[in-house]
Length: 295
Image (cartoon, rainbow, N blue to C red):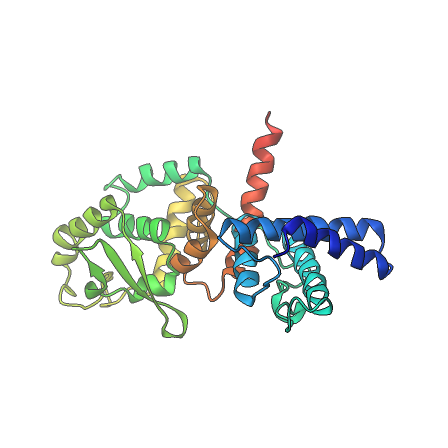
């Protein structure tokens, strides 16, 4: 069985014989060594056995680790060259790395920065919505639900009473395309739901509605009402807030606290972990850079 060190040396000789530039060879070697470290740390003994499962999990590990999209794609390029080398030397019979499938596909300029609430703004907002002379219990709960569950405003308005499981402290959310996900609820959020149901919603003329949030005129809250309510609060607290800003804040705070991208993606109901990476890894890296610059 070939050692990883011997195989990298053989790969280096192969690249040199094919006229690859020295800097490119060094880059390929570094990328393959990192890949070897990853698969060996996960119990793989024969490093010549390149499997598609290894590649897809390695790419996800790179994304979870906050590597830049360009860096991940460079490493995928190196792995394809390594894959072709293994086939050439008859260590492997098939190509498992394909640039068309494995490179992270994000259009130029699409890695965006998103608006998020700072920790200070979150604290200011939570203090403000506690004042019952200014904000109803329902509207306080709406703010907390948006902040601590990351649901879209359309999903918020669709929450039914039966979607809240008080035994497991979980919220069932039905998102785009009818996709279903479960979001754990903080204990204080559950208590706020109970209090809203008991003290405020039970007094509504729509108390029999199947939906969690009702308004004075309808049995289901409309998204425009949420937008209007948040605009009013924004004027009072002195900074911009809108529904999707809470969703960005939810995801960004999780990434900042070290939660892996796969978990964040599932909680947010993203179609792909790439969506999470596109928006929130860059945001997290910017925050880290700003923190270092304070030293």
